[in-house]
Amino acid sequence: MTSRFGRKQEDDSGTTERVVKISRVSKVVKGGRHLTFSAMVVVGDNQGKVGIGMGKAEAVPDAVNKGATKAESNMINVPLKDSTIPHEIVARYGASEVMLRPAPPGTGVIAGGAVRAVVELAGVKDIVTKSRRSTNPINTVKAAFKGLSMLRDLNDEFARRNELSGLSQGK
Image (tube, rainbow, N blue to C red; front, side):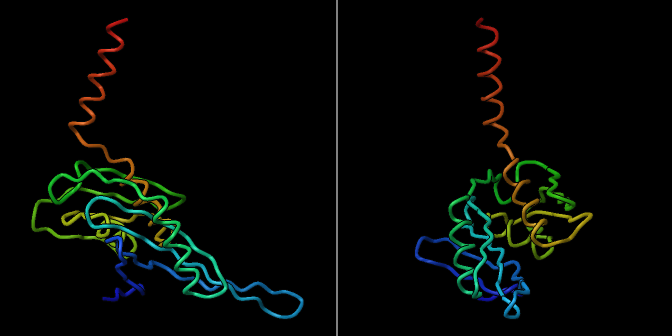
């Protein structure tokens, strides 16, 4: 299945990759123009793991493969609460700002293209998002990824804080 941003592919490990943006970069050199390509790729398993990567190469498939490899190497676990995220969060990367808000079951993914790729591949089924300020797809993907990485599970956070307060009271 292909998304409107390009390639969506599932490999043997159960992860899906989606190309968010492909850019053609032209550098003028003595002999003429030298063309290279950069690709922003999102990789996820639809069960709480997602990663992003940027690949640069002289051909588009090579750039996508490099991006997918980098994305797989920096995957994070996203805490999910049923089919949504545990709490609201606003994350910024550069001039892009992304708001992620949990939604009741049946809402679906309400998100723009760049953020949609990240949250869908993370396995979130119900979420409301809003991209504010700059809508540059690369920075928007990075802001959404940063927001998902800042999410915390409520029970884990309570346990961690109880542990810390127990240590400080014991001294």
